[in-house]
Image 1 (cartoon, rainbow, N blue to C red):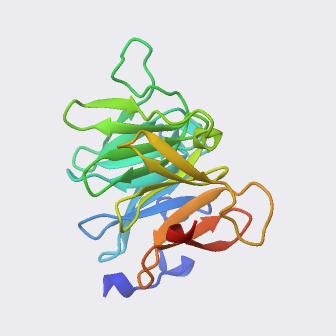
Image 2 (cartoon, rainbow, N blue to C red):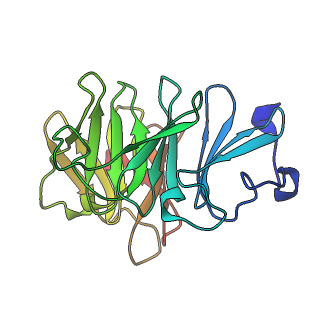
Length: 239
């Protein structure tokens, strides 16, 4: 059963695609393969055959910034979106052609990504909207029909939105953002947001939210991963 198979480091093929120490993100594709975002590149692992392959923007056996990915996601067409960690923009990888296509800010193209920063989070909600969270550049969304990016306008007082580390749509359809200053509820219809800067556990410090997920048993409750406060149980209905 592929979904239940547990892999240790010794179980993985001893090749550059999987023998990596700094893995930042994983995504299971519709075909059952596993995509791995790491500081060495983008890797595809097939657990059924125990085979893997490493793809790099700049072929190299040493560290290259352009190969350092921090997030990965498959879109409905089967393309793989991978956000650069320290390089502006992101790449869209076509598994069929094995080619990368770069998306970043182009001053002469108003339809391009309007911010020139690393992409730390990618998310597609249930309505098909594709969200792009950046480092110190806020939030953008991709208009699939018009094939253009739009900056999401947020209350300027919510400075936490400059760094968007995670994006999640909860059971009620709310778009929640994990930022470097707590949890943010984005209400795009009313063009406003609500900030929860103290959505932290016992820790003190940066309050960086790196992951969000619904509690499957308790409606209205989210579990939040933070950098220095551990795992937080957050009740959206009571805050």
